[in-house]
Image 1: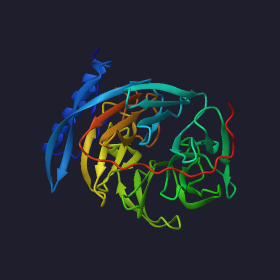
Image 2: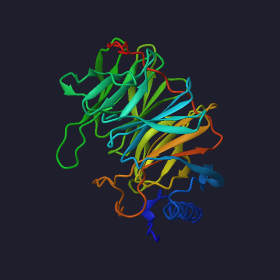
Image 3: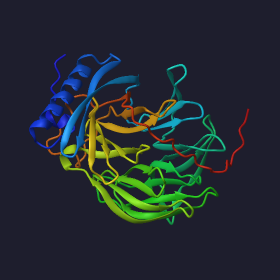
Image 4: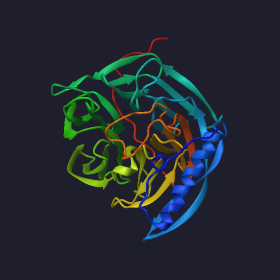
Amino acid sequence: MQVEIRRADVCSLPIAPQDALMKIIAIEAMHRQAEHPNTGDFTIRSNLFHSGEQAMTQEQLRVVADYEDLCGEGPLWDSRSETLYWTDAVGRKFYRYDWSTQTHRLVKEGFEIYGFALNDPGGFVVTNNAGIWLWDGLEHLELLVAEVDGFKCSSNDCIADPAGRFFAGSHYYDPAKEYPLGHLVRVDPDGRAQIVDEGIHLANGLGFSPDCRKLYFTDSAERRIYVYDYNVDSGEIRNRRVLVQVPAEEGLPDGLTVDTEGFIWSAHWYGGCVVRYDPDGTVERRVAVPAKQTSSLIFGGPDLTDIFITSAARSEVLPIMPPGYDPHSGYAGGKLYHINLGITGKPEFRARMARRFSRQS
């Protein structure tokens, strides 16, 4: 099958001679995947940036699962059970992948889950348009936060901190009309919620620095990754500033995670790649992914060197698309990918929200 893949289908890099090679490699990878959609392994090269020079590394990107997720999102690794969880936010499906057996399965469907964190009493804290929920991982759900200070808590990506607090970005983004700006919300273990920041257009990926003194937060519509100073004792954030401003032609920063060296990893929706940034916001490398709508990523595996990457099959036509981007050509996504670059991630923290329901037999 002949598939047309244009420049906008890959992560657009500065037009320099050495960068042209990376574009060609990314396009070749997309062609291979489009022509052989059921093959499990194919070669991806990552583009490294050091002191103005580049070096190429060659790794195997593998398809772990292909459920044709409309909006694959929120991958999360449970180190205790060596299990990966992820969601199809639009398709209303929730999955798990067991490392020991290398098998995956559908856990739940029919309930909208945008983001989630493991909960130390058991189960999960999950987010969706209706708010923030407690879920036992089976059938029992309880709405924890529906409104904060009179605002509907329509929530997206989320994260827990070392003290068991839960942060979620709320937003009301609607490209078809004027919309109110959203918030960053914190929920304490006793269930009390408060707005800790505002002025957010399209809330997305969150992450903590290894020492937990910094919190990173993505506003996709603004194409920005913000950084705050964080006080883990009080849960207070302050001094928001822009760490990364993604150029319009490189897509939208989406899901985010942080490795043990303090480098920030961001999946680029419309960009077909994940990007690793230095703690000062400088691009350290780009890793091409053969899915234009690359949505999120997380470190997992027994030693946390395995990277799992989600993608989305339903093409989103938004006014914030890159210039010249064609949402109707090329492969949008829908698969869960895996790659190991020899870089170690850090485990995510668990929320500590008291369970308000009793499990029935």
